Structures are given as C-alpha cells and as structure tokens.
Image (cartoon, helix red, strand yellow):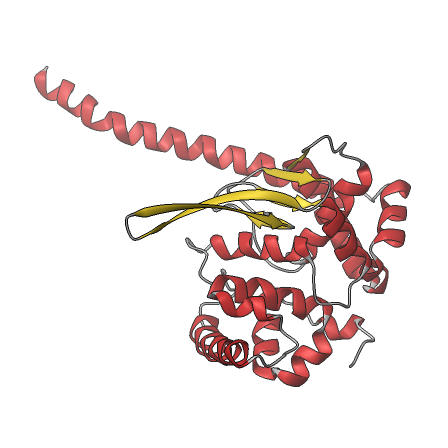
Length: 283
C-alpha cells in the first residue's frame, strides 16, 4: 500500500509535465493554424491604399514580398494591441503603418512575431519620458523628449508623428518603428546586447567579429566628430548600434554597402534580405 502511494506521488509530476506538454503543443498548433489562415487572407482595399500612399517602400518591393508582408501584417494586427495615449485615437492608418514597418524586419526571418510582449503604446507626437539612475550613492531623476522606446520584456512606445515620417521617407536612414522593433529582435537572445537570434549557428562568430570591429570604428568617429552613413547614436552602445544599422540597412542600403561592405553582408544574412534590389538610391 505504502509502495503504491509512493509510486503515485512520484508519477504525479511526470503526469503533470506530460499534460502540460500536450496542452502547450495543442495551443501552438492552434495558433499556427490561425496564423496560416491569416497569412492567406488578402489585404483589404483600404489597407492596400494606406500602404501604397503612406509607405512608398512597400510599392518598391517585388510582388512576392508584398504578398508576404501583407500576410505578416494580418498576423501582427491580430496578436498585438495598439493603444492610443494622450487622447490619440487609433485608426487603421496608424495600425497598418506600424505593422508594415515592424513586419518588414521579419518578412523572411524564421521567428515568432516578436514574442514576449503584446502592447504598443502610441503618442500623438514626441513625448516626455522619465528615467532615473544611480550616481554613486545619489539617485538622479531626469526627463527627456523621445520619439520611441522599447522596454525590455515590455511594451514598445512610439510617437505617431515620427512613425508617419519614417513611413513616408524611406531614404533618410531614420525609422523609429524599425529601430524599436530591432531592439525587440535583439532581446529575443536573452539580453539587449546587439546580438539577435541568427538563422544559423555558424553565423555567430563572424557576426561578433564584424560588429565588434565596426562598433569600435563608430565610437572613434563619434569621438573625433567624423560623419558616417551610420548615425552617431549607434556608437552609444552595442544595442543601439544594431538598431541604428538596421535603419540604415533598410533605408540606405547602397551607401551602407559602399562604406561598410562586411557589415552590410552580416545584416543581409541576419534579415535574409538584400534591400539594394529594391532601392534606386545609390548615393
């Protein structure tokens, strides 16, 4: 009797684990089926109009990538909550333009639609954010104006005026949506350190070598006041370097490859894309 009781108690955790595994597997299967159905749905005429008039980069994509992006947009909008702040009313234009710019980063990447968070907070314009840090034993509180931020394992925050400008001008190298969602890709690898999950294991060593070397170059240029196709903000940390180069990769692919060919190659392998193919700006 006692042996039977001990056996049952020992078996209980195994049973719970098996039940959890089974239910989780069913949940994943159900989610993937829904995603497949959403990706198969064509974008509405209204959504297409928003993309064609408000996001010129969309029209330059080959038809295959346009279709793929449309499917990703459907899934993204189903799984993320886009919430207006400071009285901003969320419209289809806001939802579609945020989704399109965010999903361009994952259009060919295997992954899970930015896991680990659900909410995207959108302010009408540049907003005031508070921060604090320790300076020795003293806690310093500060405020700053921001166009966007990405909280680790938390929401993405965006200023709508910058989102709109980033969508309309795809050649200036500045895109707040791509920047903040690059941070979300970065944190999938445990920490925001400029090392996202890469498609193959073999890529990690070369990625580290190239990006460490290029980051040091940017820090030196920043210190010396030398301009570069990569915005100087990228020299502030490895995480910001990855996010800033992501903006440059998608919006200034020709100049980036001309000045930093090894870096461009790494980002091409990371995103499984070559934006030069759909960019006419070779300056």
